[in-house]
Image (cartoon, rainbow, N blue to C red; front, side):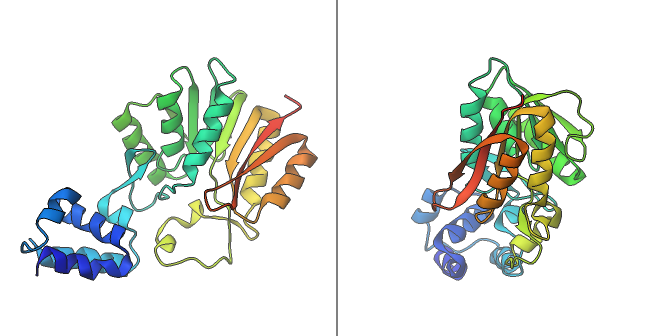
Length: 263
């Protein structure tokens, strides 16, 4: 089997996937692969094994052990949510709000692999960032990535911010927000359910976080589901927040910034 033959097999799942899997398998750059398409594929049985793992529902990021986010390679694996591109918008919104403070105090609820808190810490040198999670797997990967990027964040095992003292300038979260009955493909179903499902409706955890932020933060910045704007807008209004919603690159409602008028 030649390298081009292996790529053609993998292209069933898209060109980008095929080249990323081949790069991982050969430990070679895409440029090298283009120049050696007719070479014999080394360890072809191992490549077929990787392809079968993906066909059986193992996400590419779990196979390779990393995911690119904001130009950085974060380590990920079974038991931790795989970062999505749209969460980069959440970071951008948070940086805009953080610029209002000289040394912002930030809490992240649900740190996952650490992409949010670490990305903020690398941009906000004076920030005090505390990040929590109830998942030990998530905290383990967050610690790996924190050390990898030498990010100044504090990691705490906690439900929401129950074990964290004090108030904050910003609470930020990309919480589970998918409804329990929402159909998911087999690759997404390989990710931890606790990081995906927000409740029967889907917005239950978002509302719980908003309730916490009401008494503990000036700003709340969250990612949400595309169909949750009306629900969250009404809930935030009733709590006394002034909210602004943003869309992702597909034009779908994707998150909000809420200012706590009572703080």
